[in-house]
Amino acid sequence: GDSVTQMEGPVTLSEEAFLTINCTYTATGYPSLFWYVQYPGEGLQLLLKATKADDKGSNKGFEATYRKETTSFHLEKGSVQVSDSAVYFCALSSPTSYGKLTFGQGTILTVHP
Amino acid sequence: DGGITQSPKYLFRKEGQNVTLSCEQNLNHDAMYWYRQDPGQGLRLIYYSQIVNDFQKGDIAEGYSVSREKKESFPLTVTSAQKNPTAFYLCASNGRGAGELFFGEGSRLTVL
Image 1 (cartoon, chains in turn purple, orange):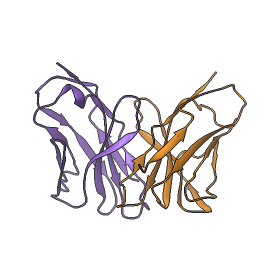
Image 2: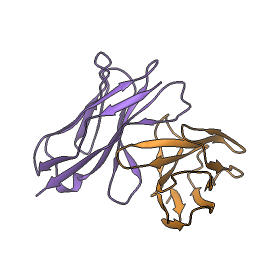
Image 3: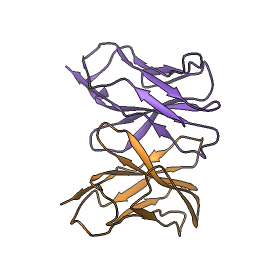
Image 4: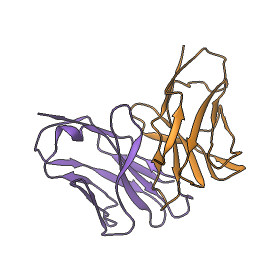
């Protein structure tokens, strides 16, 4: 079945540091890939997505590239801010999943001033 | 503003009681979902509905029940058969591209 594996956290960084959160997946066919973000006490919000190989999703300074050869979708940001502190979830949607998402376990990011 | 409203935000239940979590959306979306979130385990799908009067079990449906009588509403009942119901429950809807879900702010259920 489909699965998503994220790097274990928590991740603690200083403001303006470079961020990478690793994500790899297993899926049948050609899934769409997503990063969702959850701020404290809230639901999830879509951060970015990519629907085919070599696509780059980007939003709010975050980027992720769909790498089919390595089945990866790593999240990166060049300079994090305190306001980026949140839980980040990698997810996939297979063509036959009727819109359902399979989520990774989430990575807690804390950014200190 | 369009969105998803979940209520209550916090709920306490005694063992053996059924509880119902409300989820209402005004986004005119056809598909709705219920996920359960536990620390370190990500989100797991409980039930989903792609159209009114139809719903399917997700990965962890045992001990839960749903209904979809109206497009706007998708309530979740946590029954006494659910062995470990303490969790954060998230409702979502999807009316755009596959996988582009809109989430409510969640309901935290604690069993005393």
